[in-house]
Image (cartoon, rainbow, N blue to C red; front, side, top):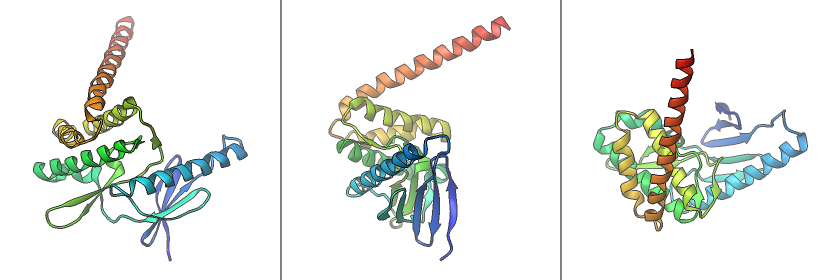
Length: 219
């Protein structure tokens, strides 16, 4: 069976082989060979365990096989959400965002942090004429944490991704996510912390802007 590389990333390459997707963590020449091997094996095991765990409660690719630095899973034949969300009607797009919020709430309730929540790491697949499934992919940066701060930062990253990629509707999208996320057991504390995280972000942006203005004045 033919196989093709569909993504060549800094950490791993994704290879499609029929209905199977293989994530192969690539070696890093700048690291000591033994250290690199240990890290790649550890991260592969960790990611596989997390995918298996969240797969019990949300839509993710199903793992078929795990070797030392490779994860074989079923290939999701859908559309990358980052490329398709803005093409949908606003009503359908907001429903998809509510599904996203519901899934994030579920994984946060079992203390899993995705670590890279963007619409590029979500696949949209039709369930039926009225409903869509949203598959979460790429758990390479995921980790276990019960900390409210980590959950708030996870949401903040998604907010930034919306603002960057879907700037015309990002505010509505994020509000739809939050409306469903409120079903989380710790939603109140997480959303309160999210406000603080965003305030820190605005403060840092303000500082960067002020520094740039000072540099311009000196020039």
